[in-house]
Image: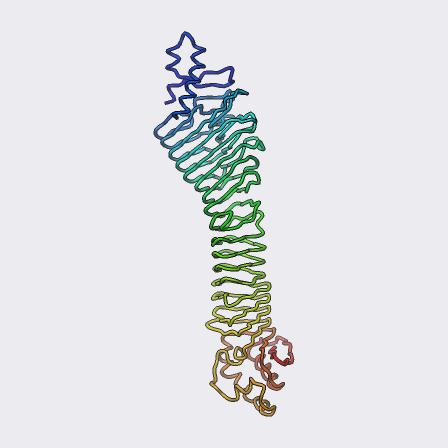
Length: 514
């Protein structure tokens, strides 16, 4: 198609323009008037009917108007029924979709390029959608790609004078290599009008809009490297989800899954530059597949959280939904709603309150103050160096408990007969009551000495190890003799040899085994 045109220098416009060779041949006697007339005719023709190229082609085959500095630009609308490659044209050989070379003329070029298949911008090549604006309107360039746009260099929406309008639509994947860059304007801070829509942004390069107006909309964003800057000038939205697998996501706004980063967030190695908080709303999904992440606050209304990496949350505010840890999870403070399942390593370091909604078949370590309102079943490994208050008792089922801190329970059977059983013996029940005469209680000393080293010791010693701290049993009153016997048995059976233990007298309602 381009062979029917000829490039002619237009002194008044200050650039080359395309004219029809056929019309030149038919009007040799009035050359000047034909050139002007041809340009006007061509402009009107291309506005109504875009030039078409079938098959794969290169930018050099469609660029037919050149500026005096070596830059190339199209001067009509084009449709490429195939793929298009934009090669490197030298240091000043920039390529333009639209370029205003009228230098004050009232006419502003409005050009569009449509690529039905894929488009590639080679290394070092620079494509500018709209260039040389005058500040009062500028040029208007539109690029539409039906397939993928592979950007290995730089794509600017404007050039240098302001007022340019750049529009980019990618129906497939907008893919940025390590040297790929999406930016507002070549010289920066010239406030071009930006319109960018892409189904998927897959970037290892740089996305940074420092100035301009308009909007940037992505369906899914995958950051593999480089940096993605959340612009403070141009509104940027992600409708489907964000995958942060490498590089840096420079967020200027809080990250709320189910709101401003789509319905899901995958964290697999990259990091946020300014994310102290992470929110989950509208049944959003967060999946940590790798990497190391630390949030001051995680506010989760509903939805799901899964962790296969290393995740630390100072304040875990989960009011609903579910969370599952298959990696390493550290929680500071939490008044837990919803459910939390641990199958790997979970550490509690602050004040945590649960209500039967925390289950662990992995390793659960408490270094803080953990209060469990419901009866708790230990099915994994429980390590305690802090304080645990089982307000409704606990039981051990195929698990193991070690404690050097304080364990408190309101169920005497947790300590005396939680695993072993001796049947309904009268002495056993009398020993835990406080309504029998003192002489009967005193006579039970021999029972405790025989019972504790027997059934209980054989059962419990395989499931628990007390290496320090205290065991507090609420709601039990024993004689001093019984208390001393219990302390001696616990030290002999469950505490490490050579460890000095504190001996505490029983209160009116608690028995302290230390």
